[in-house]
Length: 132
Length: 303
Image 1 (cartoon, rainbow over the protein chains, first blue to last red):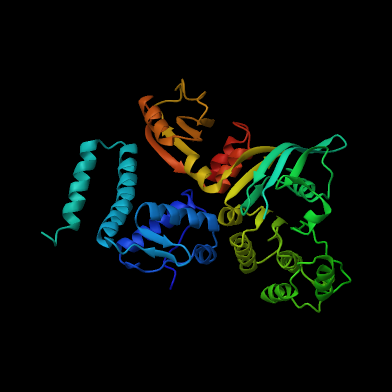
Image 2 (image 1 turned 90 degrees about the vertical axis):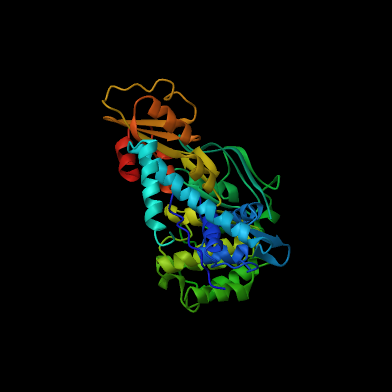
């Protein structure tokens, strides 16, 4: 299976959080399908040249979040039960982080809550135009 | 596999104190990065861990047991400077290791040397600095030891071989070995290490899991309307590791609860308040530079 994950170890964002975000994004986009096997902890650590315990920590959190399931001796798999739910949840997590960062940035440069709401509505209108 | 415990380690050479009251625990199966400026005491710490230097005070234990001859079979070491014999070929070094260590895996050694493109018929004197490092790393990995102590295991290597050494470290860790390594290339420690310690002038100044340090340590930056702002109640907060003031701009190094301080600084009248993530190099530089004196240097790095 090709590795679809990339991390930037030199960023200030903890590496395990980057792995979690990448797996959730891949699930949300369908790049990782329901039931698909993830690389083993060791394999992903070697592919990305990152610490194996860091990968293991990311996998544990993904399992707790209901995105993947791990069966001892077989490996980790994208959860197949209720994959629609976990896909939606994964997409929501990714989008929430991006929106939080954008709102924080807008607030820090002096925009009011109403200013930011107006910007958000305008952006939604623009990107969902075809759907109307 | 072993847990390494260093307690109140002190090593002096005459009037010079190389290591000063160092206490550290390296958990079993952990890749542990030891960082510090030149002369901080990293190599001396390694030598005390290996019994190559006798501690002035304090102890080093492996699973609670002090170093004894049988421990050496379980520890492999790559020193900072080459200890290869100039007049011996690489193949002769392999043979010497085989005779010295029961568990030494000759096939694995030759496989690793081939991966580094090292001609084992060459005498050590004909090897470049990087190839000497690679040879020592290959010989150490082939020991199949419980514990690896690697002092600058990538020095002199090109980027491809540096990456290869990191993957060997990761592979050994996945096998369960405990690994302590130092490198001046912080990006390598950032990749391979789960935990780090920073030592400066022989003393421990910071220790923790790399990801925890990144999650907790942030810069909160804000701009005040004029330079005469007071930081009542913030500057003394134990979660603030340092305060850098530069004109109307303040930068707080928080060790916990950055979001909390965003609100506090905003309530004091600052605008443009933001949280800046720190990578391991930033965290390292803050840890080894005293407050204020070198603020400009550090600012240059985090800007």
